Image (tube, rainbow, N blue to C red):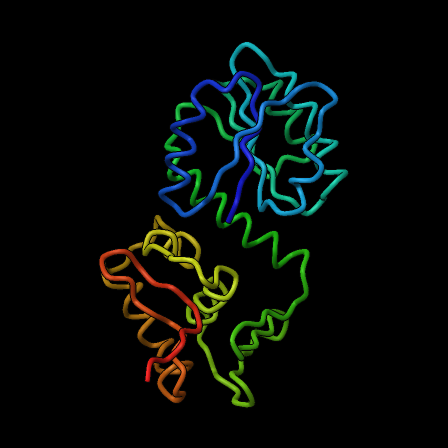
Length: 228
């Protein structure tokens, strides 16, 4: 995933980029100027993060142009401190998320990843496909090749998250944030137990395995070339 961080002065952007990198979000830092829109880069990015410094709220005026260029693009606004007028303008101009400092940037990165996933399914087709897996989001059924696979709700959500993020390493915390409510009570091995159940259904009956464990990190969903 990639996110563009749009800012006015460039201060304090380094810590945001570091936190996002830890959550596997590549960031591109861009300085905003009135009337200047990053047209070409909007095509390939997954989200825009607008950093609104304490001494300037003019950058919020970039939101309508961004939304006009790519309406489905998730936009998050970070504001330095509690500023009710900035919040109203940001949401009015189409911001999908508004947060105020102080905040934990790594938690913000996880929230933005979830926002990207939700928006992608909202504006794309209701069918997700990857490596011979078909996931029907409307009728909530899955199949691999010609085999229909019955999935429970959490297994379905797990597979959805894997397909959307295919080829990317997903931490257990990222999976928890997407599939479960962080405030709910669950065991420390909840993610591993549910992924093992999903593996039994979509991997075990097939020669080609798709869910792979990344030791001490999490999981990756990809088709690997088998070594002879």
